[in-house]
Image (cartoon, rainbow, N blue to C red; front, side):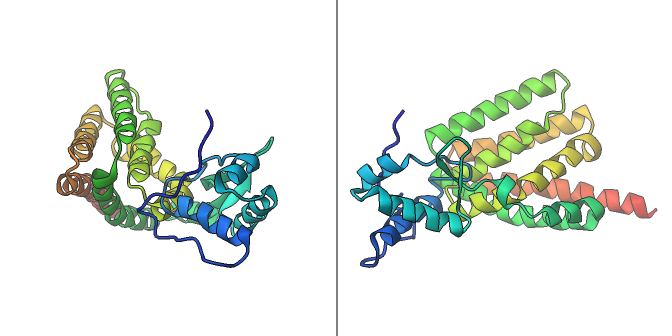
Length: 249
């Protein structure tokens, strides 16, 4: 289905410059879609011809704008042709993953940082989520319940849940932050589900906590969603503290 370029969301703070090269103005317009969160990491842009038609400029100007954004590290080429917003595999700092692997204190620090950022993100998601966002969250919750009934520990659904919230928050900067730490997030969730919270009771607790977060977003109640996320990540941090205390004994 053909994508049509339209003005970036009103939530975007980036405004195309007046004057300057046409390619610079095109780059600013494309950047506004990325900055607003409308085009998240991995999003594939329309082709050069369509962009040129929709913006009323030449393909030469579009090509120059795309190249400028690639140079800035915001876009990269798709194998076989095309352009996409840069994804986590290209931006992630491998040093962060190594720091988490070799030192549990770093994992705790990351969990504490998440407890601040994800509370902010879920409140924003409750205010800005769309019906499409809710459909994705509903699907994740259904898959999670099915896995628990089947006795599976599927980290993919945990990761999908938090990524869906990031998407619903409609923040370009937060989406890119999550893209950068996606690999670390997967390692963290793997540790949670197989070592820190391995029991069926833990599964049910996590499911209940996710339900409370989901319900707050669905009701478009930022306070309820934030409280639920704060309780969920606080529960995680409490378990971290108990694990550290046990290791010191």
